[in-house]
Length: 421
Image (cartoon, rainbow, N blue to C red; front, side, top):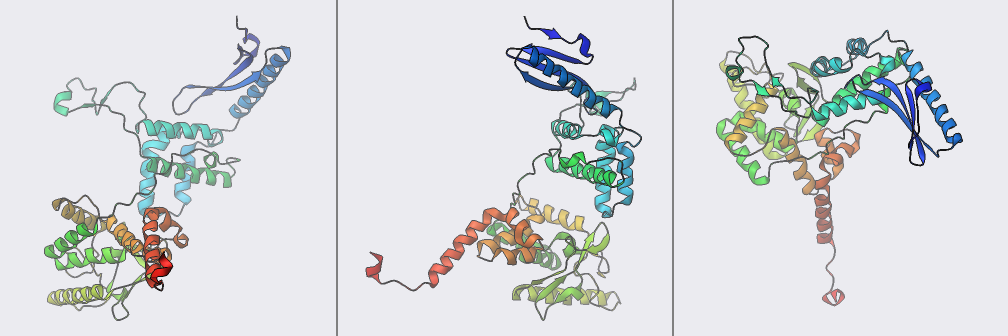
């Protein structure tokens, strides 16, 4: 019969399992799931020496837990999160997103946990729960949006049984970044000795999978765009041929179009209703082809004529693209409106795509045509000297390499027929 000896070890227990001893020590409750946590170890052997080692392990676990429980807990994670948000330089749109994650998920789960007691296990437990169910339900059936009012009618209110939906890996990774940034600040402020987020395991990042429209679909899309409106057609064409980002497109002014030099000078970005630096905080110049330059010249003449018809004087500080109701071009086209209009057009054409896919289209067309990675990276505005471009468009690089081989072979001297045998 297996020997059990736990009476004199308080929260710990030693059990014989075959030819070894199992040591368990109660270490408290999981702050996320409220389940009991045990520290465990296996000691080889069953003789007295093995039992002595097991006793030593119990003492070691007891010291570890006692030290953790005695740690100062005056600073909860909720306060650290608030201080981190207050002192961090974050874009307004990003800040709004972070505040939503913190309010809806992070604080309810870990807000009351002291920063000095937060460890990698607690973080990984939270991430696992979110990947199982975004509302972290207890697994028991319940009705969503259900009212406890006696007069409540679930049928009329269309209350639905809860169905667990996992939170996206990318969203959980964003929450990890928030917690990591907060804990790094807490470490700088002397609230913790180390940052547990640096060793916590995050969900795997989904590999990039760009899905650009085919060449045939691109022709249909741009043709329909010009049929709808010459301004809209020019906008879609420009995104296709340059791979320009949505915010850069909307924030583009005529003063940044050098049509004689056939280049666009990208320096600004329109995000959250404000004009800001580009996403990478670096300006770049993109060369334009002759057809695109001709379209932009016609577009500039249309806009100038439209502005003068309003009794105003046209100048190059006006935005290149503006909404259908903003005829003076003093305000840019809303990024969200551009995205929605493009999506509506694609849906009507029964093409499953979105605006950002045009950026992928531009990149993949260049790569498969044999344009080098560094040039493509520069046009897209990717940092890292092409590292980001390669990570996202790795599948298209072999096609580019094959094109390069064919180009090289076409330039080789023709061998005599006798040499081919």
